Length: 512
Image 1 (cartoon, rainbow, N blue to C red):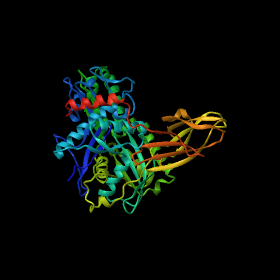
Image 2: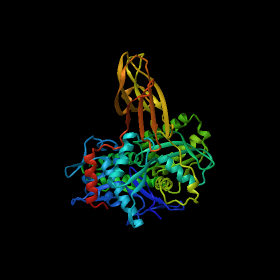
Image 3: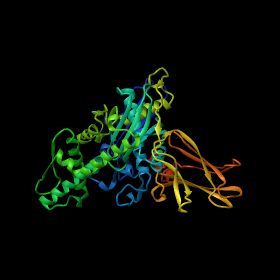
Image 4: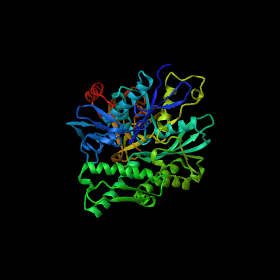
């Protein structure tokens, strides 16, 4: 049997790697300590080697300045730090893309130890709300780690895949509520008789998750410590990191108990910190409202009422928090289902998709005969056009958010001025007409064979494949001449040289 394609959930707080065998049965791979859920934390040792996972998280208490965590939130940008400063260790600045490659190398090492052979092909999941720069950085991180990334798939889609194969899905409209450590997606899908899945609508927040709930508890801890001892927990990084770990423990305990107590890490007088579930919900009231709004927004986009949802699937570790389960039940009238393995099922779904994309799946298996899921465009795509009414450039949407992909379309355009000979093709990400509120993905200039009159027909063709790779071509609408084309570069934030340097570092350094 050939080596299976591994499925990777590259999470904000935790990551998981799985594979599906020739029969379509999924195994979650454990590390040398037996851990299947690997904290997405990186510690840089003094000797130049790298530690990833639980031990790295423990080092955050000892050497916080050499530890990176929650960096997925900065994917597609130069830094994840709220200050805007680069994250540096020993004079080297590390981008979220590079840090993610270290997590992926750890997961690849785990798979290779499990298989006792190479594991170089992967499907990697991303939040639905990741845009083009974030997806490009994720693919680049995989390539730096020595992986051939067969597909980038949306996390709710991966969850729906595993639910369809391993669960007892209800036919009809499925609401996937995916609240993880750092991102939140709510996706409405249609589940068909033969296992077909199709995204209808989505909403969410790429900067909302369990880490924010930890932060709310931490702020309360700091307030109590200051009031009772006069000590500022934020002054010492080691003390602050210890308190951060306690905050996460309290959050987790409050999912099953009405209150939780921990000793605050202050010197001198011991201070016991107690938080009730009701108090916790008050601390995160703003985030609860944002989640509520996102669920309602997804229903609005799907143009359905909550009562029309046939089944609710809860995914992601933070979905264990009771207030969110109660919220979804209130909105839809359906008691939500928590997946068998909240923290693992996104990776398991990626592994099932990987098996279908690879060459190891038995064609007689049930999985082989299931259709591939139909995903949807996570963001609208538009092109910059001149608004004749205002004389300003605007973003004209050509592919709406939620459009099933792969997708191809043709759009008629016109020359904007008399005797025009050059045409600018500008591709944007976002649905807003105002260019200040969209992201420019690429720009290319084309030249007509001769000057044309205002209104001369042009033709724009867009190809949007299942991996959300985008290609755009602009033609003369009369002669059919190709004027210009652009492909959205999936290279992430790094230059070719920086990417080569990162690969070389990974080849030389020990990542454990």
